[in-house]
Length: 574
Image (cartoon, rainbow, N blue to C red; front, side, top):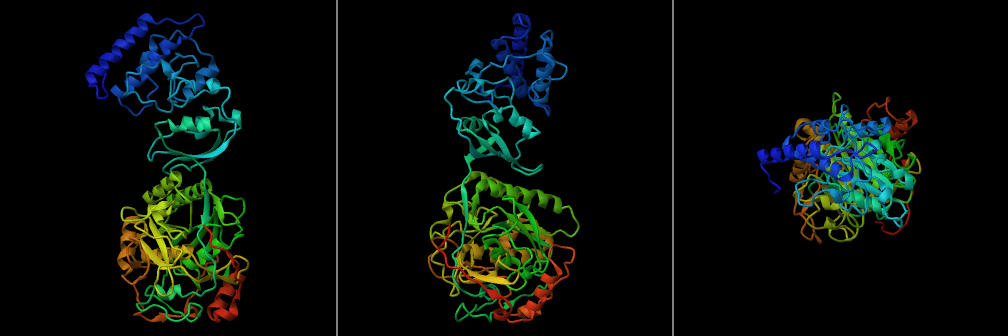
């Protein structure tokens, strides 16, 4: 029988096999079918799915069971079958739990082995998707559990609730556990499991599963050196800043006083000191994967200040939402980044129904040494949900196409990957490059908020600093065309690249476009000194009145007198 069997022929086979079961197959002495009979029933159920597509689950072919209705099931087993879609409530047919896939005729390649292991020597399976019994696992199989990320294909239906679905695998017997499951409505579906290698191998055979991989380490992209906030002048003037980047007299020019107001910027990082004066009450705690919202590293607070700080940031009216997925050493697990992004997607889906909502941006200044397909899938799902994504290119001085998530940038993606330049518009020596980099932004000697106090600032360098400059410009552009750009990642990326300055960059581009971040103003309108920024009233948001008052004072005070400067000297981190 071929893979493209015609419908009339297939129906004939179904009827013939149904007749064979009803006439020839008899129950065993204990009242249940033997293995061959169940294999035929399993085959019939699959044939019915191919011959009579419907919205009901495949394994409810009650007419095939009708002739065998005299067989009995104990109540608990019968209910378990019903719960997992193996049995229609009006049927009493059962199959023994020792059925293996070896009973299925190998000459039927069109039968999808959905959610069943391909090797009968590894598992024994009930005749329906979702049941895998471990009693035939080799006695010498590994009992060491590891953390795995399991990602379904996008738009794939997953049995609900997922806890019961996993319970069918009896994971908990070997110390396995469900650590995380994606929120309802988030696409693709993802679970993070502690399980042994053998169970991971089972998942890899499932047709519904796209990615099964161990968690990986994620690190922030930062090189810490002394410097100054020259980046704001660079992105808002035709000539750009001149002189030493250590200067403190740079000016930010703009033609839109909203400065990203209403846009949600999710800083997925080491955390954010939401009480810092530069956030003027616009920063809130959102999600933490570590059990604490404290930014013990400082990286996330610095990134947030560049994206939306009142003194140092680009989109100084945007909402800053803390999503803490990295620890106090600037590193974390890929599974935690997935948990954070899942929370963002769920919140975005809820927020977009609210009046006045403009859009969401995920700003991610971190990456892996290599690829994590599960992380890639969730980022792609976020983009498809209408969330804009800005990521750092990485600090290896290599091809950005070699790691997650930087490789998601480029001409055929809605993700924006950002490389770094210095004050002279030269590609930073540490910056990754290549065709996956979409745009370059200021990334050396950048001054921004710091996490050790509400009035503390610090200088950092890295593509981690270039990324939030781009995030901020994206937010500003969104407020200028809410209908066209607010929730359309493809359109916003096109606008961002069209607004960039062309052919101003020197250095090793290695195939990446010669595009330098710009807000489109180019210094040809009235320039704004930071002290002229009007702090909005956000009394209903997180942030103390004292912090907001401090911010107002900071607006009118010289930067080197109001803020205490702290700096640290460490090596480039990836």
